[in-house]
Figure (cartoon, helix red, strand yellow):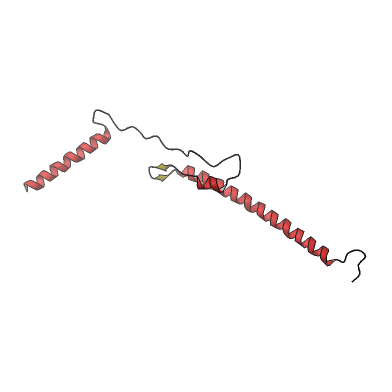
Length: 116
């Protein structure tokens, strides 16, 4: 029984010491507020995003994970870039299909002066 009482008192002393250290009851005062980390190198705004930009993208860690605003901004930018590239690819594929159709039509038509 004496041992149990000693352990309870020791646990209370440890909890009180940790609480005072965190809250600021010591000489040094309370712990300073941590400055929030910000995204250091966001995606470039003056040129299209490249693979190296995405590979080098690192999000700062917030108390409960990543900062949602930084992640949302990066994902929104990447989504816009991908949509723009998809539209450009669709335009180029359409132009290529038209050029192939025109070339095929020219090959099917007999040249001037030739007879079938």
